[in-house]
Length: 173
Image (cartoon, rainbow, N blue to C red; front, side, top):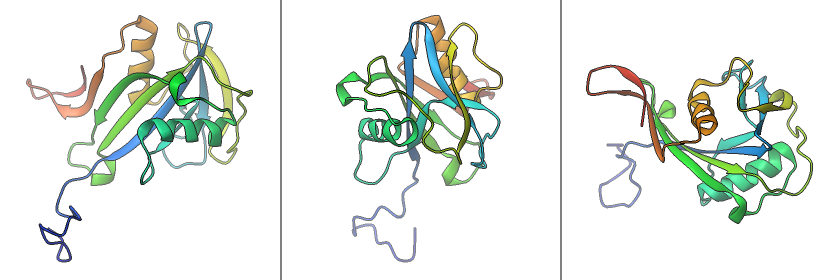
């Protein structure tokens, strides 16, 4: 427990924390919009969701998805047009708290505006790809969701990076 936190002060400084993030997969005619990460220091050179980012204080995951679509792609997505695909709890075994994540994946087939990279310092390219022919490489924890989307059966809940009953780690449903 933090020396500044008392169990009754409401701060929860003594509790383990996870970092929430929201992902938006824009879809059209069997395709998905992906960006090529660049200049971020995390998975640069990998293809990733068209828009994604951390959920900010006081914001729901759905609100974060709407905001990220606007900030990263310049499009307006109505909250009611976001389909919840899955929630993925992932961790880095023995890693820092910053690497303990809960990811909320949304898909949208309706939005206003034409998607265009808004943050060129964080992405080098933006392209539509058929789900049957995704580029390489794709950020691994996102690839799990994209493969499931292609297969037409996205589990409601995914885990990645935790020990399975047999002692292995990896994606589970």
